[in-house]
Image (cartoon, rainbow, N blue to C red):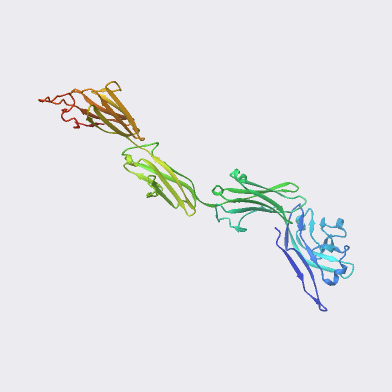
Length: 455
């Protein structure tokens, strides 16, 4: 590659008190691709006493620094030179920028520049080293943040604006190289990326400017340079981005598939994508405001589930850059649990409630026969939330001592029932006895008889 240009001020003499003001600006070393051309940026200056002699006829000559020194290019006779090429500009512009064509391995070595006028203007300037290489080097891919170069192993933070730069040496401006970008995943180049390309004297530069997101973490960007030489030569260089970001794609799930049966053990798990990895996982019950933590850790295990454990659980994943929540529903399923009671005023009224998951169905039976709405029987059903049902039975006729009223409940996990048996009231003097109804002298007395639950 070309080393940095330097200006050499040649101050080796003081002649009768006059300062020697000859200087030249050119690289210490340039690389030439075998079979291609080499470009040497160069400007010079002369001592003030020779200004009048600097005309368009001044010769600009390159010598190869061998013994004896050999002229390889003379601007006054370029066709006879051993190195074909061109010195750009004119002597009066103090331009010595040069292009040598079709460089061979034998052309490697040190060269110096000389100016020769018709009078006393004759001067040899400092040397440049030409190194001939057989194959073009790979391009250089660098990452810049806030105009500062970022080391290969260093990570950048999500939201930062960065510049990914690819640069390659130009060996011959008449046959410029071509730079292209590719990425893995491919779509990243289409997501709000600005591409800028420019050509300097000896270098071709392409910039990708974008704001990094978590999707750029461990993504690769490849710069490909194609040199149009005697044959097409392609070189590549790849840079992997490393991005730090807050938790993303946080999710929570239940170990059981769909639901868990009452009494069983269940584990809730939380996962998240973050860099650096999640520092803390915290579980909350979504039943209170503000949420109160239940447990810390990636997994939450409930050993002996019951209906009170049903509900939404929230997991919070957190690292040094932020936090993200995810939630999951825990569905504890169980067979029906039932309760019922009856009372009498002018009619017999019974109320039955069942609680179960899935939501249970309710029906009334009289001595084993299913009751439906009729002239003497009225049934009113109500759903209480997602796991409870209520049914009210009203009977407008007397019951015998063998009648049993039964509330029956069922879901996919089981059944339950509660029964009421009515005994006749003994006839006494001055009173009237009816089957299944307490003594009418106590019309407000509630009768709760043997009630039981069958599972």
